[in-house]
Image 1 (cartoon, rainbow, N blue to C red):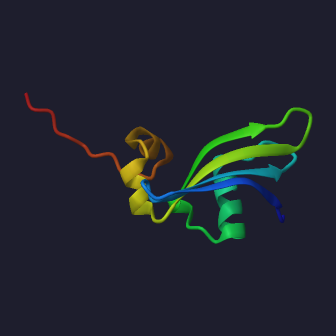
Image 2 (cartoon, rainbow, N blue to C red):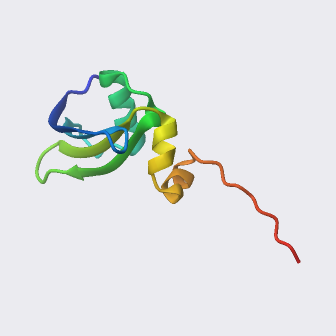
Image 3 (tube, rainbow, N blue to C red):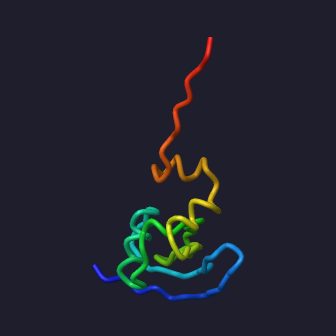
Length: 102
């Protein structure tokens, strides 16, 4: 299924080595974060591991959804900036096991 994305705002943020993107997408139901990553990969040829989806909001009474995403230059840059808990939750950061001393 092809998706049209309508870019509303695109801002370069060199401090964090990323582009901040706000766009609209039209679908029958609210897309998941993984679906939005797939769509960005398909349309903009961006590595999914270097994308951080911040929010997906439905526009009342329509099939359009407003998405805010950060497109990092690399997955390494993303790991430096994104909160560790978010990366653990999405499975992108391996949890380090520490041994408890008695």
